[in-house]
Length: 310
Image (cartoon, rainbow, N blue to C red):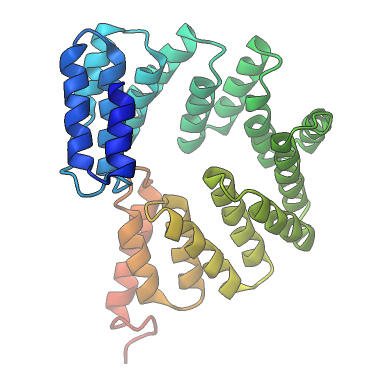
């Protein structure tokens, strides 16, 4: 009841502060239940990220998440949220420990398996990321939610035969989601084979068909921008990356890709502005910071023009 009232107050009445007070009442009424704490933590996460609860004073969700885990140390949702917070704080070791504990407790929970694999990928451990997904598939052979990320990584490793086998499995399914997954993987295979026009066509179709699925639409645009880059169409590349950033201004990969595109086009000052935003991301790698320092040094040596000062 409290959650429904908070959602109505927030989304329909546009009163985020009042919605937060409803959640405070829920926590007070059920002090030994983890769910009200996690609901309030998720609300605070949206507020902090400037999502629909914008207008509230941002609050740190970590205390509620930790309290929920004190009440229920094996709560899967709390473990996922805690790992996410560790990643935002650049504490990747703690995030890994948290997710590894979750996978140990819930070996068939695809969310935990995918998150742990994604974390390893972000750390540059693609082999470990593949291994985690393969172990997850072995524990849950019908876990189709792990097939696509596994196939995606296999493409990057050049194991296209295994990827094609996964595509064949997905093609046997008749649901709409499987059709989108097949198209996505076909585009990835075309990119691996450097068939840029074919990959572009598939990704444009996928983007048009994934309206209402923000994650898939974003990924399609990122890959599409890469195809335009390979085809030498810098304008379309940048326009496509801006579509990603219009939806998610904090998307680190898109921000860095746009900076590189601007740099390659000689727009050094604009590239520096994008890098300034990129390094604020909790997912910013040391290489991003190094890129910004090199750009600053270059602009200083050229008087801010990008060309040698006279």
